[in-house]
Image 1 (cartoon, rainbow, N blue to C red):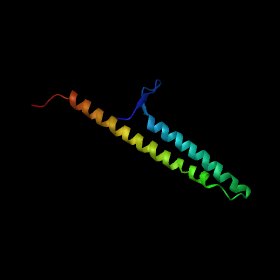
Image 2: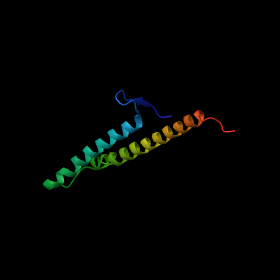
Image 3: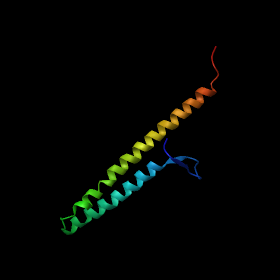
Image 4: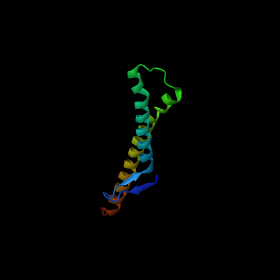
Length: 91
């Protein structure tokens, strides 16, 4: 079961893996900007480590989306279980 924290404003739960994924995505976007912007001033030789850090964006995006989908399905299953438990038995 993923660790979740309740948002005090909305009462919704947020998975930590979603937050981590979003942080990795934003970091990847920053590294993409750092990697791409020098091309506009004719500096085409970027280090390999910088190019590899650009992969944080798709990794983080996939992690955030996958974790959000998994959390949503889990909430849906819990809601179905609660609804089934409240429904009276038909004779």
